[in-house]
Length: 241
Image (cartoon, rainbow, N blue to C red; front, side, top):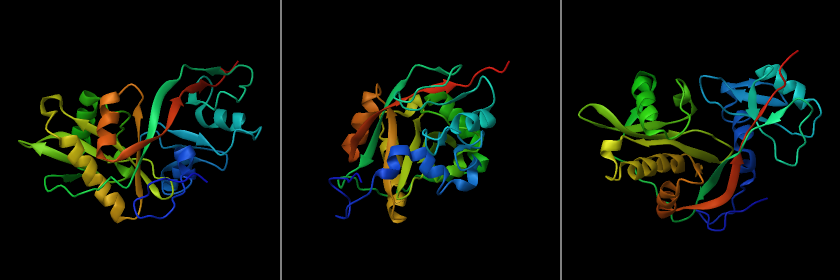
């Protein structure tokens, strides 16, 4: 068991679910949004582009992946130590980091934050397309609570919840319109999200690109710490025939 060294309430915290946060979410809080079975699962394709396997040690996992995504399709890659069967290709990795909260992180509700939902999806997609915070699809809002800030009736900043492994909630889709950056809107929305995560009894975590040092410094200043570096890559299933 992995333990946070400075937990929020003084109690030891199990970080094991964070080792494979996607699988933990798909078999837990987000099981109702999952497709697949006992060995391979993914989110509905209009919710999130994430998938995972229960174990890479089961020889049936490769056929189960092909059954799910089809021939010549991409799927999240296993660790480098796992040898791919003949005909499978591994893509270049994208390097990121996983951060978790410390006892320095104190959420607070924001009076200007408004809840976002189905009716706001076109604006959310537009802001994401301009700010590029990461994947956000037409039904991503179903993963958790999303909030935003409007100026002159226009959505200019947003943040919300994504993965939900047991005891944890991931903060994601932190985006600010370029014209409104430098005003602290992202920090305010992150802390609003944190406040409601803590109200539910969960702890906050997030992922960031390893090269996005500005965002990582911001999160660390709010009270997050680096848990581990991560490498995100994909494999491609064999083309049939």
